[in-house]
Length: 114
Image (cartoon, rainbow, N blue to C red):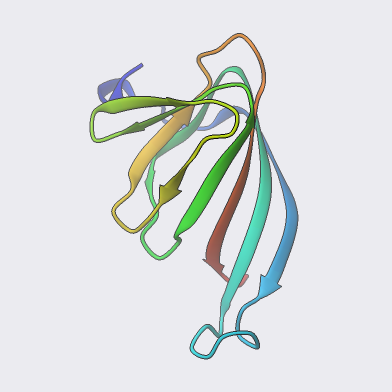
């Protein structure tokens, strides 16, 4: 798949919320924001879509197992265990697992409180 045929919806992905912390009491000016950590599991052939951005939701990802392909700006980049990527305000992307084994990542981001 390339960006021209990006998926319309997520499939084959499970997300487990591991931890959150309310940033309002921790950092001045962060009221209404949380630091969130999630475990994301992507089965072989799965996609995490649709194309989405990270404006107002910066984060970082660390791959624990398997290989995750990050599609952004018309470029597909593979990340394996021990590697990861930033997701800043300029990030517009979607993800997939093109490999034969389950891929697992830790995703940490700052989000608006529910």
